[in-house]
Image (cartoon, rainbow, N blue to C red; front, top):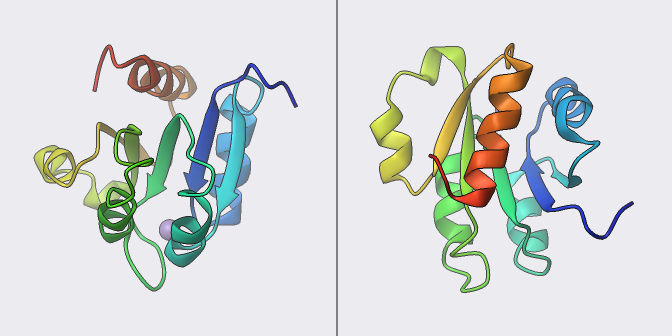
Length: 128
Ligand code: MN
């Protein structure tokens, strides 16, 4: 673990997707994984990351709701967030931006480089 690496909170209930994200960007970022909304709401405000990657389709509460609640924490409020959406749900970009996300990526994530660039750009605030 390198302390200089930016921290990312990955909220994703699907283990395969967590492995995939870690395989793509785990070498460059310190990733904390959360499987459910309640887990994320418990852990993230105590250890605010530099970026949140949020699956939308989660059990118990969806990613839009989880982000809304996370944003109530002053420490998490300014943290940029990227929505990870199932392909069928990916059409409505404005909906995710209005919900407080800074960008989104549809799943399955097939374009490794586009994903890496989205993460990097969202972290540095140069692109949504
Ligand atoms: Mn899911």
